[in-house]
Image (cartoon, rainbow, N blue to C red; front, side, top):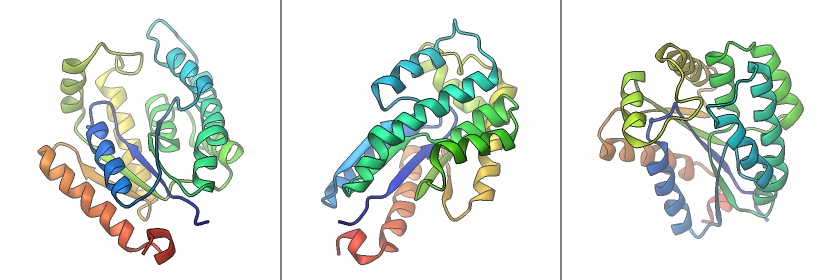
Length: 215
């Protein structure tokens, strides 16, 4: 059986990932694929419990505690959801993965890249997404979108300077891994963003080995 592919969506809050994630799910289902949609932190019963803790604005925690909880949730996510789905041939789409840890705990909180890389190696070894779409928007725009949509969680209550550091860390990751991470201008009109996403996904699909694409 052909192993599935793992696609991740990244971006600061308010970047507009969710709408396009749903489009990709339907696109892949139309190809006849089993699609598993998940998120981080979360994806499992334990992961969702940790998510509530991590997003609770009443909780104060050390940046390293935050990172350890993120990777603990990720270890469960890989074991219970992601790897089993890929092994049975399903395609997995995740709203955030390890790039978010380098952006939020690294760029935002100032945790060292070396420590995050050690956690990454420990938790997932050489495993990484096959394709990552990073939705880039100015911090001011993302803040406007979040404030108009919902009550802010612990991360969303952070300062503009925090989110600018997160954004720059994401962009650095994109420069570091240009073959995997594609930057999408999320500040464009939704139709333009959808077109950009479709072009990236269709190009990815077209370059798969024939057995993987089902042709």
